[in-house]
Length: 337
Image (cartoon, rainbow, N blue to C red):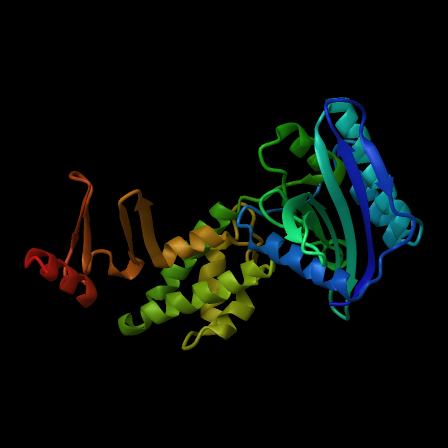
């Protein structure tokens, strides 16, 4: 998707004094290395299962970003001013709460025929060592897209035109509650949805429709549903039941939507036929897995009560017809091979 606006600022605050700003006066180029950086940051953002989804809160006066974006889209505020004002507001929040931070704020707007996105990433720099042209060891710095990254994505079309209930995606700062609180307040993120509850309600509907599917096709049916939904979640896109029904082979689309929507219509974080789902819950639906220091077990959920049986009282698993490779290893061990 083409970048239409991009800019970066730097904000640093230590325990020794007030926060320091370094504000860029002009927008960045929208091609080349900046495209590559945005792609890397977006990839890291979308890979995080901890993403929250919601909408702008109507409460409080601290929701600066919502007001700024409204003015930007109405042509009343330019992109550079938006980014500088938000960075300055975060500076004041750091000073007021005495929060430490050393990071770059990277603002992007992307627009195509059917998409219009605003993203703000707040990223630290990681240090390492490299060899220069004179083969001397020198420090090197790179934008860190790992666990320290946090930010927010706003689907501007969903917000302004469709008014979808989950047009915001947010990753909060890790391990820093005061910084998280300041970020929530400045962005105006609110009305967060319970994706896990919505997903469990959705899967209940998927199981209810499974009764309409021949037994020999049920595994494939469930796998197709989960594959489609995980792919949507990885793109930060909602699941629309009508589109899902068309993507699953061998189902009656109208009947599928009717039965599943009956379960999802009253779920928290769902609007009947359109849902934002939880990747972790989806994967648990088709596979059970657990790991400790010296033991790892995983198996497809449809094997429960078939080849795998669980005894609640004794907390034991009984596995029959074990995989051939495992059988070979066990027999070799018993024979001392």
